[in-house]
Length: 393
Image (cartoon, rainbow, N blue to C red):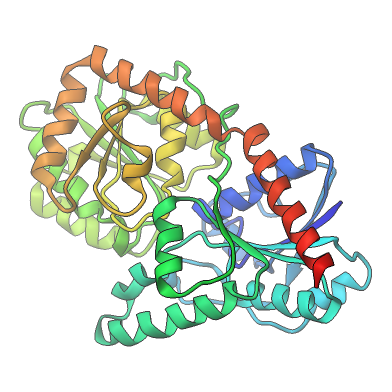
């Protein structure tokens, strides 16, 4: 079977959707499928600005990457490019017609996929990686209007897929509540448990020898609420002066966080480690003691699951999908924006190594069910459903 996957953001942008798409494409290829991956075109600057090698990822011999016409986006929107629909997917399909299209986002790439599906009568499957209503913070002067328009567009788009998926139950519930009527299914993103696994990595690899490390990885964006982590570390350092919060990622919010770090006087307790490749990110998790996430808008929180796969206990917030994956068995859940509660839980784990190891081991066990072998079986069921549904029409 040949599967075409469309996504609006991809490497060299590093994030949950980008990682999930690459891992899915690679895993499908390893399972024997022919995969054509349609992503934005990128400039050398997009790679060099993130200190990453120029060129496409090697996702295996079964995966081919094609670039759709795109334009640069303002940096504050955190994606590198905007795909401009030009029927590029349709033209590519004239040579490599897929049996099925799987779209990962609903913007330019999504429209390319939708048009090609409609014109060539190819089954369309959709995945929604985000809870769109949570991004109203980027439009504070028109938040309600933005949410209303985006929800309507989301409904219109995913109701044109034969079946759609979300990575968490709460994300599916939101889509149903907002009016998406077509069949939906909760399917976790694949967690690369072969790369993200418990391993002894020396902390001095990150220049943090003899430091207790709390880590976070993700876009440096408003919704990640890293201010809460900084305020929590400010409290933790009073009992553990050597503690360091390691922040992996990039984004425009870094300047604002640096200002807060200076105001709190915690320059020695925070380290920005930059955008990390998947192997480097795994090493950061393996060298750390606790993973913390304060974002209340996650549709899954892949980095939390990747940290769990490395045997780390997690302290997360009681917002959206995080409580689906983090609980008393593998970490702590605290109220949203409560930096004092966050600090208390971080101290519990940093002061009780046995407890941290116990919770970390359980987290690893929990994440193992999201291996590529298990999740590909779920996708095969979805793909067969879509193919059969198309035959009925």
